[in-house]
Length: 114
Image (cartoon, rainbow, N blue to C red; front, side, top):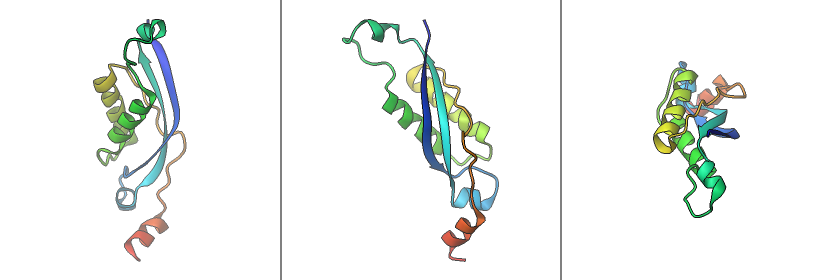
């Protein structure tokens, strides 16, 4: 049996993009996660450990999303899916940012003292 877990609105500051100000200053991303996992054992007993903890999923997804500076958001989403599979054996099609990221050039200039 496969269950779906939804975690929405995870806010992560990361440095993805192709422009210098995107990778130096970074920007705020909001991602949504959907995990498919077998939770049937957890639904029948409290004795077994919880296979997928919401807080662990968020921590794993955040670390994977921030781990490297990707030029493409699709690659960052792939890193999240790979990490969730590796840690939880749950398929995780992370959705691309649900809000448009904006790395304002003025923020870059402010950060550099320009």
